[in-house]
Amino acid sequence: MFTNTIRGRGMPDDTNAILAFTGNKDMHDAYLETQKVITDADVSELEAGLTDCMKRFKYHFPNRKLPKQFATCMSGFDYNFAFPDSIMVVSLEMYLGRSNVFYKMLQWPQYQVRVLNKEYMLPDMVRGWLISEFDNAQPVNNLLNNMIQFGKVFYACDALLPETADSIKIGYNSAQMKYCDEYEKNVWGFLPPTICYMTTILKQLVSSQQMVLLPQPSATNVRPALQCGWVGKL
Image 1 (cartoon, one colour):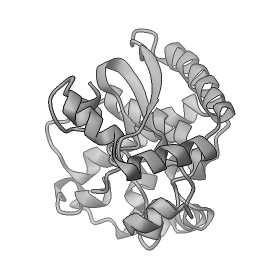
Image 2: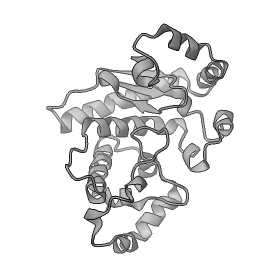
Image 3: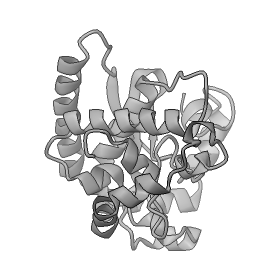
């Protein structure tokens, strides 16, 4: 499962692929860094948070199946969350802290590394899980349908993470949250009446970064379409 699903390279149980990955010096150094930054106490806290989320999920969606288990891994800086075979998997090297040397070596942009802190692990996992669980099955792939879909996801995040700050759940900083609140009317006024036919700006909703399934806001473009879709907040 690791090589085929998490790493996306090789065939299942590909021993050579596993040995090449685990023997890579950079990956070994990154692993040692995760051991320093993310402690056993952090993982235990994450497990406790996930347990509480699953209890709330079962309350709101009693007919839905819960994930089978939770696991941590090293994805080679490819993913921060994956959900293969009903297993919630988080990549620890994606949460080493915004100033970590590995992110500087990779030359990732600041808007991306700003949210690579361990306090984002739980909301990222929950949001990724919900996106996987409630796939957007709308036959028309347009801006409006995506706004509604992500709005529902964030609204569900509110129910599962009632004590987590909105800025952490959506990945915005305080200035971006303030902008969306202050200029809500302007944002809605800017969106044209032909919104349901707009498909060319869908890329503003889902980032093309390696953060699979998880939309990330830009420092210069807060992508307020996601905020507008957050029906419980407007």
